[in-house]
Image (cartoon, rainbow, N blue to C red; front, side, top):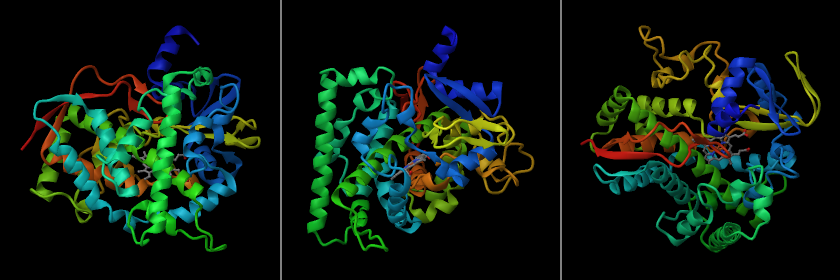
Length: 454
Ligand code: HEM
C-alpha cells in the first residue's frame, strides 16, 4: 500500500472501502495481514451471508483478525457472553429468550422517558455557546439507556461510575482493536489499571442492581427487571446472575455508543442543510406546538423520522458487519475460502447509486411514504424491487439489532424534543476524519454553536 493510500485509510476507513467497491466491484479482497478478508457488496451474497446461510458464518471474526492471537477478547472481557459477542446455539437461546423484552409495545412505554431526558439536555444549553456536541449526545444517549435499563438518572452515582469506567476515545477497550493493542495491554499503564478498576466498578453496580431487584417486589418496568422475569419455556429456567450481567452490560454499551453517533451526525447534517432544517422545524412546530412529543405523535413526525433514517443511511454507526466463513463458500461465482473474514458494510451499500441516486446527498425525502413525482429523490426507500438490504443500519437476519425499535423511537423523539427550541451550527472543518474501530464517530468530537430558535 502506498503512503497516500495509507493516509486515506487512517483518515476514513469506511470511505476508503467505498472507493474499493467503486473501483473493483462487488467482491474485493482487502489487505488485512495474513487473513483473507473480503468486502462483499453483491446483494444476493449479502442476503445469503447475513440471513439465508448465516449458520455457515460466525460473528467471532475478530478472533481471526490480523492480531497475533485471539482478537476481540477485550470486548468479551467487558461484554462476556452477551448478545453481541456470543455465537452458535448459546446465542440462539439467549436471543429467543430476550427478544420479547424488546417488543414494540414495551419500548413505547419508554417514550415519556426519552422525551424527558432530551428535554433535560435541552434545558442545559446556552444560547450562542460553542460546545462539544458529540459529547453532549453521548451523555444524552447514555442517559436514555441508563434510565430505561436500570431506572437510574444520569446524575446518579451509578451512572457516573459507568461514564468514567470506559473513556470514549482511546483506552484499553479500544486498544485491543489496534495492531499494537496486545503490547499496550501488557504495559503497566495507568489506563490499564483504570480499565480494570472501571470493569470492576461496573460489575459491582450491575450485580448490586440484580440483587436489589431480586429482593424487591418484581414489578419494575426497567429492562433489567423484565430480564429477571424471562423464562425458558422448555426448561423453566431463568437467566443466571452472570447471564443477566453480560446482557445488561451489552445493552448498556450497544445502546449508547451507536445512538450518540447517529444523533451527532443527524445534527451535523441538519446544521449544514438549512432548507431541510426549516422543514423539520415546521413539522415539529405544527405537530407539537409547545408540548413535548409522545409516542402517539410519531406517525405525524414523518419528516423527522425521515431525517433520522437518512442520517443513518449516510453515517450508519454500525458501519461494518463482520463474519467469518466456517467452511469454504461459493456464491454468484465468487469463491471464499474457509476462515476468511467477510465484511458487509452498510456504509458502502448505502452509497449504491442504483438504489440511492446522488448517494452522497442528504435527502430525507427518500424515506417519505408518499413520493413526490416532481422530485427525483423522493420515495427511493420505497422503490418496488429494491433489495431490502440496500438499507441496513440495523443489520438483518438472526443477528439483527435487537434494539432497532428502541433506537429509532429514541432518535426521533430526541430530534423532535431538541429541535422544538434549539438549532445547532457546526464550527471548524467538516468532520472528515472518523473513528471507526467500534462505531462510526467524528474523530475528536464535533464542535457546534447552540442557537435558541424560539
Ligand atoms: C442508532 C442506533 C443503533 C444502531 C445503528 C445499531 C446497529 C446494530 C447493528 C447493525 C447490529 C448487528 C450487528 C451484526 O450483525 O454484526 C446490532 C446489534 C445489536 N444491537 Fe444495535 N444498534 C443501535 C442501537 C441499539 C440499542 C439502543 C440497543 C439496546 C438497547 C442495541 C442493542 C443491540 C444488541 C444487543 C445487538 C446484538 C444482537 C444479536 O446479535 O443478537 N442496539 N445493532
